Amino acid sequence: MKIFTNDELRRIGDRTLEKNNLQMLDLIERAASAVSYELISRWRTSQRFVIFAGPGDNGADALAVARIMYEQGYRPEVYLFNIKSAQLSPCCLTNRDRLLETVGENIDFIEVIQTFNPPALDENDVVVDGLFGSGLRTPLKGGYTSLVQYINSSGAYVVSIDLPSGMFGEWNMGNDRRNIIRANLTLTYQSKRLSFYFSENAEFVGECQVLDLELDHESLARTPTDFYLIERNDVHDVLKPRNPFINKYDNGTVLLVAGSYGMMGAAVLAARGALRAGAGLVTVHAPRYGYQVLQTAVPEALFEPDRNDIVTSAIDLRHTYSVVALGPGMGVDDVTLDAVHHFIMNFKRPCLLDADALNCISRRPMLLKSIPHRSIITPHAIEFDRLFGEHATDEERLKKAIDVSKLYNITIVLKGHYTMTVRPDSKVYVNSSGNAGMATPGSGDVLTGIISALIAQDYSADWSAVLGVYLHGLAGDLAEQEQGTYGMVASDIVNNIGKAFIEVMK
Image (tube, rainbow, N blue to C red; front, top):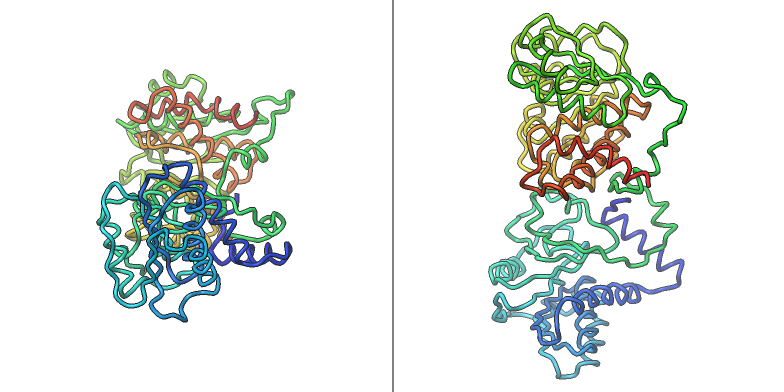
C-alpha cells in the first residue's frame, strides 16, 4: 500500500473533486462524517467533548464534526480560533455558519478573536484537536504553543483530526516537540503518514485509525510515491509457488560466514532461518570449535571449518554460492577484521552483510565504498550509527539511509519496530508485521538466514529483503500467539517461518 505525502494526498483530493464534480466542502463533510462515526462509536452522549477548531480546513473539519455530533444528541463545547477575521479559510467560515444555524444557542460556542481563557480540563474530558492538520508548513508559534502545552498537561483524552496539531506529515527535523499535541487517538485520512512510523513520534500519534475518504481509485493507483507499506497481499503477489519437479539445487546455495567461540548460537539461528525459508543447501563457515555445535543443532546444514579454532580468520570461497552472507556472531577479532576486509575488497557479487560484519566495517569505514553494488546491509539503529555517525531520531536515520543507499548502490534494511528497506532508487518499504517480542537476542540472525534463502531462490536482492522482513515479522506474530511478547525467543521465530509462508500463500 502506498504511503502518500501531504502534497500527494492533496493532489489526489483535487482530482477526486474534479472527476466527481464536487466541492471542497463536500470532501470536508465526508471527512467529518467519518470522524464523527468514530467518536460516536466510542463515547456516549453524556461524555463531555471540548472541540478546538483552527482557522483553516482542519478547523472546518472540526466544526462539521461538532454539528454532526449535535445532530446525534451530543452537546460539544466549541472553541474557534479566529485571531484575525480574514484568517478563516472559506470552508472554515462556511462550516462556522452552518454550525451556528444548526445549534443556535444550544451549545457553548466561543469564537476566539483576541484573548482566550481556556476551559478547565481533566482526565474525564475528551478533547477534539482540530487546530491544524496537513496544511501546516511551519512550527507552531504564539498563543497556539501555550494552548498545545495546556491541552497536553490537562490529562484529558485527546483525539486529533488528520494529524496531531503541530506535527508534520513527513519530516519533523527542526520542529519544536514541546509544541505538538500528544494525542491518545489520531483519526487520519486515507493512509498513515510517514512520520507516524518513526518511534520518536509515537507519543504524539497514540492509537491511529485510518479513515477512508473514498478518494478517486484511479488517482490513488496512478500517483507515484517513494514510500510503501508492505502488507500480506503485497507479499502474496510476489511469492512464487514451488514447482513440484524441483530438486534441492534448484533452490539455491547459501554460504553463511557466522559464529565464533561463545557465539555459535548466532550461526545456528541463521542456518535454521535459511533452511526454514527454503534454501536448497546451506553451508556454514565457522571456526573449527563450532563443528560439533553446528552439526548437532542443525544437522541439515553443511559445515566448512575455518583454519582458526575460535574465530574466523579467512573467507576464501571453496565453491560458488548463490549468495554469501556475513556477520552473525562472527565477533570483531583483529584477524576477523582482516578477513572481512579482504573479502569485501575482492568479492565482486552482491552479498549480505549483518551484525559483526557491519561492526568490522565501522572500524574501517573506507570499506563502505567497496561493498559490492546491489548488496544488502541489515543494521539496527546502533550498528547504523556506528557506520554513518550518530543520529538522534529514526527520521534522521532514514534520511541518511536514503542518501547512502544511493551513494553506495546498496539496499539498507534499517531494523526497528517498523523495519524500513531502503533501495538505491530512494524507494522505501515500511514493514507492517512483527511485534515487541521480537526484540530478543538472535532475532536478527534469523532474518539474515531468511533473506539469504530468498536470494538463493532467485528473488532479486531488494525484493528478498522486503519479503524476508515481512515473513520474519509474521513468523514473530505467530510465535507471539504461542509464547507472548515476554516469553518469545529467536528459536520460536524460526519454528514459525514455515507457518508464515503457509499463511501468506493461502
